[in-house]
Amino acid sequence: MKPFLRFAILAVVLGTVHLPHAVVADGKPLPAGSYQVQLTDATPAPAVGQSPDAERWVEFVKGGKTVGRELATVVSAADMATMAKGKRPAANGSLVETLEGGEYLRVWINKDKVNYLIHLSVGK
Image (cartoon, rainbow, N blue to C red; front, side, top):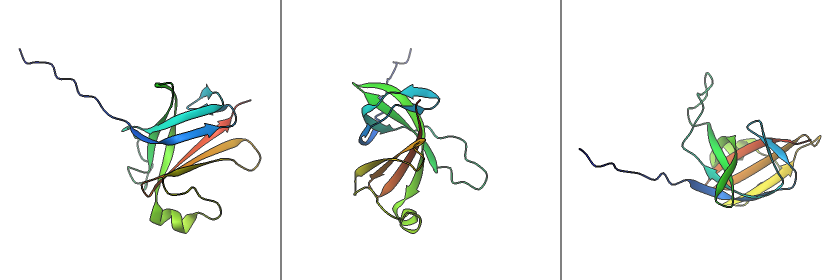
């Protein structure tokens, strides 16, 4: 009998963010508060013409436990330079903004010259 080997998959920590409002992440409520955001290996099937690494699942972790997850749009620094106008997160930093109309919260994490944009519905 072959020995059973167990491998741990280490999550990549993107940063810690504070959500000022309760939101909905992946269809489930996520209370206001501070969360560690971790990048997973999971990717959805790409849309026609979309790069296979254009979206990744991220997890919201509190007290060492995953309490929510959502898709993040992944954008390189070079592409973001031609797209974004206005305020941006610092290198290896984050920015949390309530978008116009107050219905969505954008979590923007800039980690190692890659941008992760997470859009969450504001909970009612």
